[in-house]
Length: 455
Ligand code: UDP
Image 1: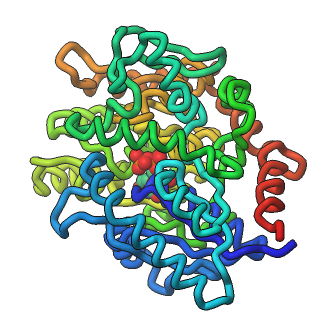
Image 2 (image 1 turned 135 degrees about the vertical axis):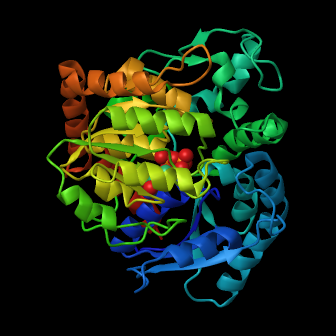
């Protein structure tokens, strides 16, 4: 038994890089050597966002390869990105492994790749590299992907993945309800990319057969429906950063840690934390309405507004808003989110329901206000509001906007709900139990590590 040299390959987006960095740190603690592959574009962002002293990347070698896009092309366009990287990355990855393994020492023995990078599995296999598949979103989302042929056969979807029937779907007990029009591959922003993404999804579910194991960033209690359907999937989550939060997570923006001392000054359980992940965008009208609604709550507010979060909004407007509300409001362009969510001053989390944010809020015992934007986020909202009971939806009015009054009312309703508070506490305990010695995810992680130590 010896820890191997492992090549880690995330899908090139922030919500995929972070959990695989968390996994990488855990593997390093078990003695593994990790080579972590980002696209050149993301690699540059990760390097510039590292803390000044570089952070503790001991045992992890960050490397990069091209993504096939030109410098100014829109990398937030999932379809365009996927077309680009699936063309050029296979060759570069093959070369990277070959060059490393020709040296004769520290041979790359395992590939741990995002399931969405499954197109590389046949090449890795041919090169004699063993494969572990990593699924970073909800297992329910993977279960739906695996059931696509059945959904087509039953006339729910057509051959191209579009709904044939407009209806709510729940594929098994204890699983989220999802409208057939809200399948993740049909909710990617620009619909022109749908054929590319649908093909990626259906191809990758086939390539999964080449992996010796599929591990998921989830845990049994919250997704027992999905694990009953697919007993071969191994939950090892929720993946965690190190307890002192000083190991880099591969962030794309430098985190503004000054909000932590601001949080220290707020009363316990008072702050509304608002963050919509790395890709969601808001219209100017909705942004302003939300800003006014948050002020109406009268509560302290910590809000992540990425530089590209909204178009058309003037800096002047934001400056005036901040000046008028400086006693209570803090806006940052990127927060140390996991530290924020663990802070005792935070009362609730207004979120786009990306899976990482969903797990991070859940394991820190926070109630959610759900504002999904795209892909699997509608399904995660359904878990929160229909299955787990740890949050509420932010509903739009007839003009498609969530009004300022609605924002204020929802925050109050959420924080007044004893039922939600009880569920939140239960879920937090489930998560902690899973990760403690003897917990299911803990044991699964040990199994996973033992497999990768096999000679
Ligand atoms: N995140 C962060 N700082 C922020 C906002 C988000 O560190 O200000 C992290 C967050 O903790 C999570 C990830 O970015 O781990 C976002 O992933 P998620 O799946 O929630 O959403 P996505 O960005 O993929 O839409």
